[in-house]
Amino acid sequence: MQAIELRERGIYKLPDQREFVICKSGDGAGYLLYTLGAWQRYGMAEYRAQVNGRILSRGLVTRWRLEDLKDTGKTADYLQAFRAS
Image (cartoon, rainbow, N blue to C red):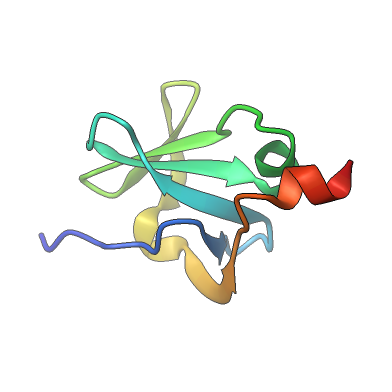
């Protein structure tokens, strides 16, 4: 299985149209998926994607995989939260 590389701070969309900001996890074992609202508030990631492609929510496997994410071409701004306040 070939590893899937996602763009750091890239905004990706699941088939249900929800968008997430993608960041590599601190331990290097996959990615963290933040809702746009959580990203703007420096909140917690809603999902974690493992290197094997599975996407987890609160440690439980979801029906989604990394292959399900579609790049919107947008990139999240680190300073977005400051502009919103």
